[in-house]
Image (tube, rainbow, N blue to C red; front, side):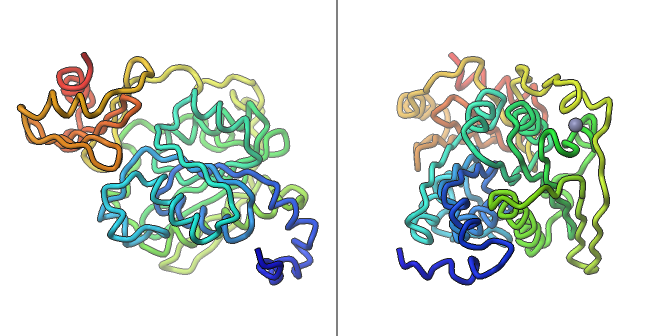
Length: 333
Ligand SMILES: [Zn+2]
């Protein structure tokens, strides 16, 4: 690698040669590879962060393309984590990149978080953010909470032991349906890019060894241009960072409503599934094929996407019980 690649960054007194070396030795987990996650992953790779882990459970869809980085129409139907890793490898070949096409549940979160220096939020749902918050506080790993919707976004660095965690601010997740999804409320293309820039700046600051900046929630509205930094504090009764109770790391229900009219169904047991075998079994009942390592089947007017780990996304239903029933009928044996 040409030694001049990072010269405009190392000349900054805020980073310097020493900070750049620390970035090169650091490992960052990007949780979610949608719009926020792809912009964040590209900025981290270009900044010289040495190792990136990417986790995402979904496939690239046409409706993602107006706001993401890294993906092109050729990536439609591919797992997001793998498509992102492939593109990043050409942008920054010296960075070690490991994609995980998986649901970031408690087991995987604990496993991955224990081996990284920082976690960046690219998630599209609150449930998983509480899982990540618990795993990060438990392992003492900093993470950058970031959320976007409509024309706005917000971000806060969580530094366990130093400042507030997600549950200090929002003690419990709102009930399902209380917050509109991006499918319902829409999202302005530049919003995730701007919020990803803020969260990666926080990550570079932390990874390069700059003292704490915890206790500040930054709001940004890209449409009005309004920005605000609100001071935040630890809640003395926070069950997570003050009580050491990690309630979101316990086993969770097997179904979850996703953005849009779709439901994710988790297998009861973690075991690899033979997708070719399943496709052959489903073929007489509807249309079923395996492409890019996932099975896609059209059955009873719904679209069923099944991953090698046994997880499925049922598109075309919003009732978790109905999705579970379809899963039990066609996938579980
Ligand atoms: Zn807390």
